[in-house]
Length: 316
Image (cartoon, rainbow, N blue to C red; front, side, top):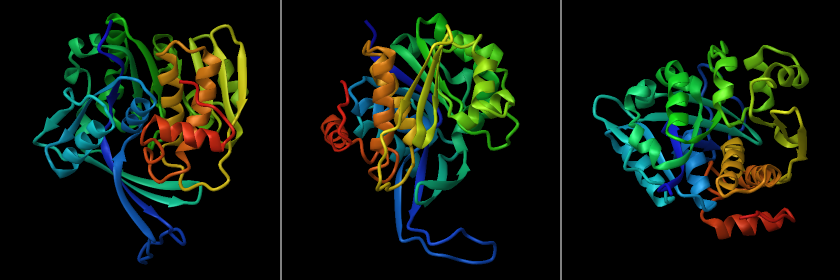
C-alpha cells in the first residue's frame, strides 16, 4: 500500500485571469478587462487539485519561489487536499506567473516560468516516488531542465513501481524537440490534444499522427475539444467518445487538465479505460462552468451536481 494514489510532478505557478476583454490588445494601446482573479495556475497543479477533489489521494513535487505567490500556491494546493511536503521553496528564484486573457471559449497566455525553469532530475527524491502509485507530468516544454531529464525521470518512476501519464501541452518555441519514440514506451497513458500530437509527430492529420505513435504507445487518449476524445491502445483499438457540451462557457482554462484529472483519478481507482474516458470528458466539460481551472471542483458533491446538469453521472 502506498500513501498516495497520484504524485503530480513539475510546474507550479499562479494564474492572473483577465475576463470580459472586449478585443485583442494592440501594441501602444490600452484596453480594460471586466473581471480579474488570482488563481492556482499551471496545468500540473490544476490537474492535482481537481484529481484530489475527485477522490484521489494526491501529492505534489515541484518548486516555487520563497515569496507571496509561492505561499499562495502551497496554500491553494493544501486547501484542495493535495500533499505539499515535497514542494521545494527556492529563495533565489521567483514563483512562476501566467497572465491569462480569456476570450469566450479561447484564450491567450503570457508566462514567466520562474522557479520551475530549473526543476529537474536533481530535485526528485526517489523516496517520494515510492510513496505514490502513479506519476503525472505535463507542460514539459515550459520546463527545459525537466525536458532534458525526461527520459531518466520516466525510467526512475518506472523503477520505483509507478505508472506514468504525460500531457506534453503546447511548445511555445514550436520546435517539439523531444524524441517521442524514446519516451512513449515508458508512458502508460499519453494525453495530448490533437494539434499537439500532430506537431509532435510532424504530421498533418490525426490519422497520420496515430500511425506515427501506435507502435510506441501503451494507451493514448487524444483530446479533441468540442468534438470529444479518441482513445487508442497498443493493439490499435480505438474508442471515440463525444464531448459533453456546455452552451454557456465561463472560460476554457484547465479544461484539458480537468479531462486528465477525471481520467487518471478514475484509472487509479481501477475503473475500465472506457469509464476513465467518460469521466475525463465529463470533467473537462464541468471545468468550463466556472472561472479558473479549479473553480468548478470545490468538492466531489459540486462535481456530481454539475454532472447532473449535463444529464450524466460521474462514476466515482
